[in-house]
Image (tube, rainbow over all chains, first blue to last red; front, side, top):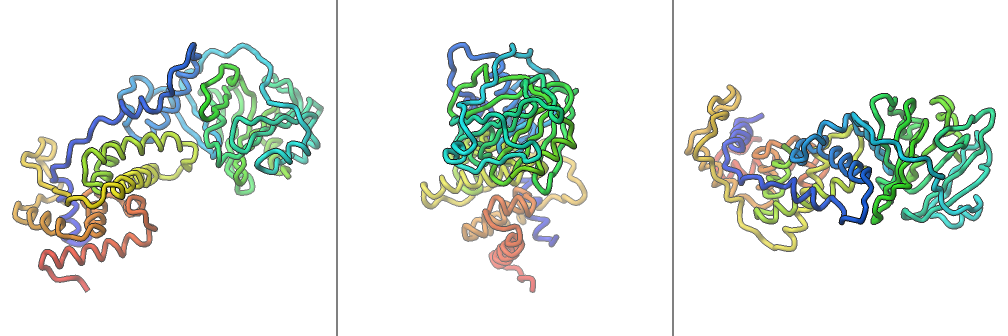
Length: 253
Length: 159
């Protein structure tokens, strides 16, 4: 560093900079959506989590939110999904039917979606196919009945549930909240970024843009692999272990 | 912490306190919305500053030409600044005024470069994000801006 560079750096320290205005309150208000009637408590929690995630990253913008900074222990992100590890989890929601969308066929789904859906060849053809239009490009769910290779997951009653959508168009559609007992592992599968969640049940929710949070969008999930595959975000849930999940991911065609 | 650097970076670009505040605020809101696209493991500050600088530039474009930085040295130092580290020897007042005046005379681009890299003490990566140029370009822009500043200061330009 030259003497001039050193002097300029020092000058920066000695300058009478304009005082930084208080930004956190206004930012918080703008991030919070318009109030809706009977907003479910978990919505406030998920909002707090999202705020806390930014707080952890931004180093203090939301310091005015008491207690929130400590609530999130870790934050993981893929294009299309966010995962937060929290000190405490909300009470589990009552069991409810899966909200997978409208029943269709794989061929019809291929024609109607904004992407080519992938099928894990290792699991064969899905037993049922569903599409939803809550995100740009739509989303698909492939459901597999339990089998010897894919035992029933308590969370879904299925052997395997695969969901896919354009992560580049809906960067936060899938949200996950896990406690300290859940194993969360970052990994790469043939170069694709992935997150593996295993062990204690964790919470899973959809976060559709411009829609208020719906209580039925929250449910307990079992072991899950999140995979960023090109523009797609692929989510696989089941009672399988990581090796089997990786094998399924590698067979996506 | 990042609130301050975001606001100051926006101010260096817009040279308006009101616009800088708006730009920083909008940037944090957009950063929140784009959190899912943030590459885990990547440094956060350059990502945030790129959003801040983009917001600031949008305001600058719509506002037209702006005044200089109108920088001045703090008259009273805070108690925690009273004992400078050895490498941070304080500048004498005459030198400070000379530097400030020379910076004010620089063309916009050079002034922004000097302000980001040195006055704000941004890293090369952060400077690249704030100036919206590749990291490799930062070195040459800094070098040219320093040469220009030396000319303004009446000093010899380094070969």
